[in-house]
Image 1 (cartoon, rainbow, N blue to C red):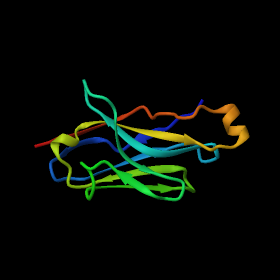
Image 2: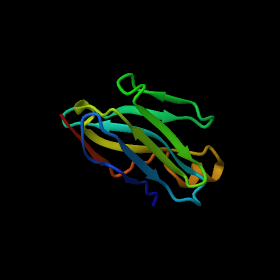
Image 3: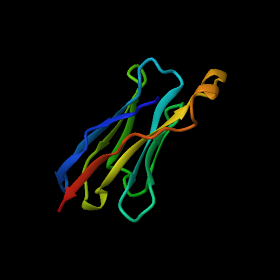
Image 4: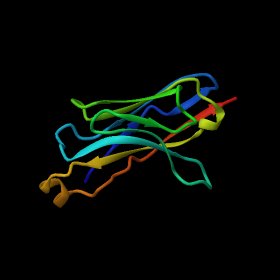
Length: 124
């Protein structure tokens, strides 16, 4: 079973910073964490930031200039550095993985997996 282990959430005051981590098994070449989403009660899950295989990044307009997504391929770990946090950033943050399009991976793994979620709360 694929597990994406998230960590780094918590309570912070507005203007503060947090760093989220999402780790997949180092020896699993089929699964690679590649995006962060967030969700608040009553709303749909929304994309926060993503990184492609060529290290191209994209961000939601609401976080551009404040959040930075990065990846350590050797550790198969995805990060989200969140600076200048605002109360509206309060949400449960989830990481999502992508699957390598190799025959073995297509046969044994799902297209996407999600982390368990980590709560980020920003107080005003």
